Image (cartoon, rainbow, N blue to C red; front, side, top):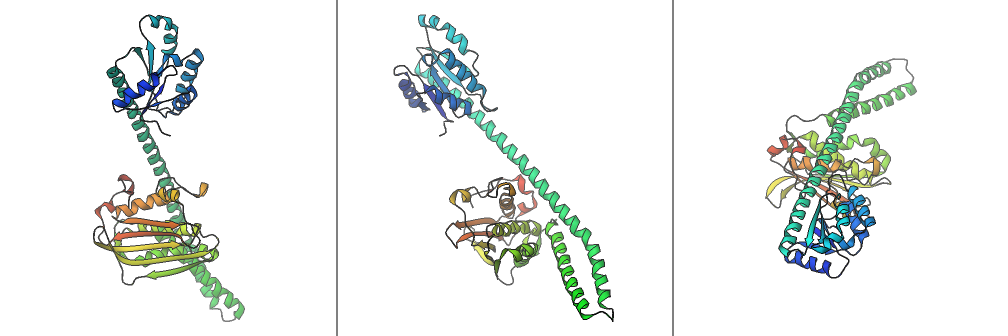
Amino acid sequence: MSFQNTVLVHAPVGRDAELVVLILAQAGLLASPVRGLSEILHLAKAGNAGALLMTAEAFSRPAIEDLSQALGEQPHWSDLPVLILVPGGRESALIGHLESSLLPLPNLTLLERPIRPVTLTSVARNALRSRSRQYEVQRIMNEQEQTALAMMQSEKLVAVGRLASSIAHEINNPLEAVTNLLYLMQGEPNLPQAARDYLQTADRELARVSQIASQTLRFHRQSTSATLVRPESLLNEVLEIYNTRLTNSHVSITRQYQADLQVTCYEGDIRQVLSNLVGNAFDVMRNGGALRLRTRELTWWATGERGVMFTVADDGSGMNEVTQKRLFEAFYSTKGIQGTGLGLWISKRIVHKHRGHVLVRSRMENGHGTVFQVWLPYALADSAKEAWHTDDVDESC
């Protein structure tokens, strides 16, 4: 349970806790009584409290040492406000030694009793306001850390793409040389038929290697300008990249492409999106299954704008509700160390930059699996020219 906006009150003697909670509640502040010191220490150590308000009767020397240790173990961003009600008048002399022990506590405020309700609520409100700024600092720090990690991962992905492109480019020359030699060998008049058949098989396989290399070059080459492309060509090029995996995975492919569709987009980026979706589908169908690919014209219901809908559907194990809610979070992955948790996060932003939408539905019953849909408008958004990571994304679509 979160107590980030709550004053936790620990007063073990009499009705002090009840009265303090009532006074703060009447002033519109959240307050909750806490009976045991151990719970106070746990929440203080975790930084999970708006403020602590305690009475002097709650303290002994060991209790002060325990609280001091717990406050010292707070997260680095946390400086939990501690308000302590101490007796006034003659009674204050009796606990002078206690006050001197309390003073070293961080972010401490001593309030002498009897205290006016307006003073108590004012001090508590200021403590909560100060605490809320600490939580805001924590949120900003977490966001900055996430962004930095995402940029590092993105740079790694770009480096891998460049390496793949370099390798594909470099093997083209020796491939061409070997292909020419095979052609010359097939022209030998005294060549046995069996050897000629072997050479033809080798020639076909080399042609397939060359095609894979060409597809790899195209796949990783980033578009510098938007182009008019056929939606089915993007899906077919992605399948070419996964051709070997498709052969070994016992996955059947069903393609339903509407004819004569064209859409303007940054094809390298959209190809990356479709590759993520197809790759994820293969991952959940390791023992075989059916992959359904579809393109069709669709008018977006909310705006009446025409565009193209890509559908990638599998009959794998599906996803539970928790996974579906966190699907597009950065670094959230169900693949363990094999996943970066960035594929769908980046994909959502790429589609957003094209003023498009990503939809997903999934059921864990046998045979249902997961359906991803990507809708792109015919009219390319100007925002697609911007870097995907510099803009906020509406995750509600």
